[in-house]
Image (cartoon, rainbow, N blue to C red; front, side, top):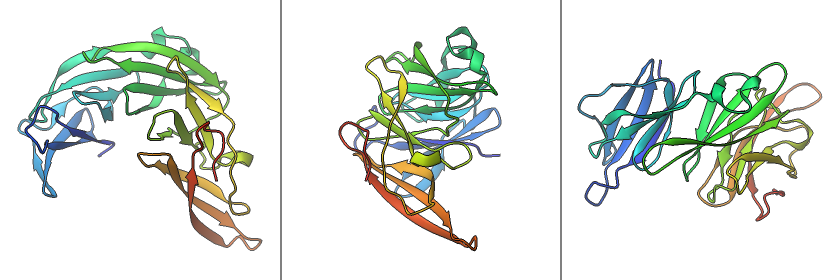
Amino acid sequence: ALAATALAQSPESPAPAAQHLYVSSTGAVFAYTIAIGKLTHVKGSPFAILGSVVGTTAHYLVTLDSVGPHTYQIKPTGAIGPLVSSVASSEYSGSYCGAPFGAVLDKVGHVDLRLANNTCAAWQTFSVAASGQLSFVGTEVDSKTTNLPVFTGNDRYGMSVNQAGVAGENGLIAFQRQATGVLLAVPVGETDPAGAQPYLPAADNTNHVAAAEVSYDTNWDTYYHLASYTVAANGYTLC
């Protein structure tokens, strides 16, 4: 089954640069070139990988399996090259919260792994160097069982909801990228329709976050909304 996708742009290609789409399957990734709205298979696709696609940097494909994150070279043609780097999350702090079940790649090369079990949850952060090597940044243990966040355009803040799609009394859950590179949960304030439960947040390239919301009246009739928020400079207030 198809699992995850990532979009990459090859800086080595002549302008306008070719764009490539990567779609996960079981133990492999399908690579496509995007040209004038048309998808064309990259020669050699599908390519064998460990785990599923998390995202891409300018030169590397990042994947995740139950062991940890991995990076692969992206060739100018869009083909996937050899494995460059692998790390085992169990060798780093926070691993007592369980094996990674998901990861997100921000715009500057931080890979945030989500670990959780019945007793705790943690963010384990790695960075992708220009060489493709993965380096441990740090761990933040928290009590929130959240979905993977989406990041604002400046990569300073991530927004999420919990796994049930209900974020509790404060609605969205916010994270701030610390100077060390780790994620830290921070307070967030917002005004939602009465009883609304936000889910499926998405962010643009500036400081806006949109979220689908569902609410119920006294007869349990269902109402859907699309809410738009602006993230303030300090990340603490949305409206």
